[in-house]
Image (cartoon, rainbow, N blue to C red; front, side, top):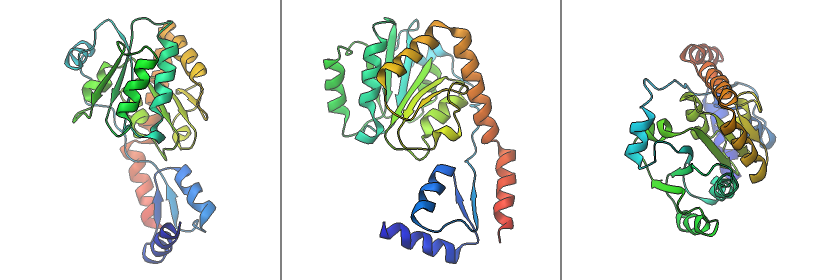
Length: 244
């Protein structure tokens, strides 16, 4: 805490303005220190990918059957990223969607534990650990749905990138600012607590209703691209410059 107090004290004295990429981060800081003058909050730029790779080619590259219903997540395999919730949800989904394949991109100290948990949940044949990916375009292009879970993420980049690709997102975030991008039930499915049963029920609903799935994906993509548009970013930068 003392580090951040020194950091923001220095920032307030030496900078004409402070920018936060989400209201969540700003509000967390404001609870600890007086940090309201000279502050602006706006997200980074988010763009749609120039071209989404053909899903069949992407799945072939990753070793995924082309007919599978692919659910994935990407990130550092550490406790706060809650990949155990991902696997517990997968265990519920597999009974209703036998052709489901669950793809985890990333690596970290939790990998051994998660592989063992997948085995205990009888998911070994349906879960793929593909490790770190230099280029996530094939990963996103192979997905039908992103399942994102975290105990804390100021603003999880993985679900926002998935929305840019037009992929529907089902998520549970106990502490974080993802709700600034995803309006629950409209742009995606977002819980403020981990509930594998509710997450699985929503995934099954999206799987069973392609119209609903496509509508939610389109709404999420439109919202992210609007909030993170270069034009909006320029306007916010001008606002930030005017603080001086």
